[in-house]
Image (cartoon, rainbow, N blue to C red; front, side, top):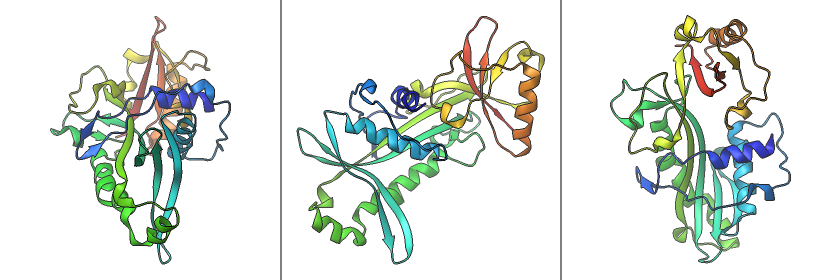
Length: 267
């Protein structure tokens, strides 16, 4: 699974290109994922933390960057304020870059006018615009927090010389059977659909087969080498998640063998 996580990470597009919203997108270097022989990823590790490990390993095998440090904790007294994800050094220019990593799954709600407000987590608890605000107002300013002053003197590094960028990758899901306008965001991020439970429980979907992937499998493209279930079996599994207000990802296999990824939402 570690190798497929690496492939999935590399295949996932950045949510925007160049600079948008006052944030510069990190241009990920070309790497050969086969150079990674093994990644130790504990099963209990949250997907976001797994992606941090994958990012670190890919930078490690890169010819363009070296990893100065990762996950630098920032405390104020006994209060944990946060952490800096990565500081990288460009191999040729020696330029230092502070990179904050985000890997998200968002559905697109076309009823909302502004693109940045259209993106939300499948359970409607994780909003793209709040993540943007957090990056700009909380995470990036931590680079200059006074508690880090002794550390910069020890390294030594002048934080003023560090450029700040974000590696923001996302998989987006449009309403089933519809198109969704999201510019200036990257339309290549749209990889599937979302649908309500009631719509999923209709005759249109009865003849297809389904698989409910583990969250670590959300990252990778749907493939055929899984234990498929019929629609009735899938409804029973999905309904258990609906009761808990948890929207599962489902892989759907049509009669012609084509595969789709979709979220079935409870709301």
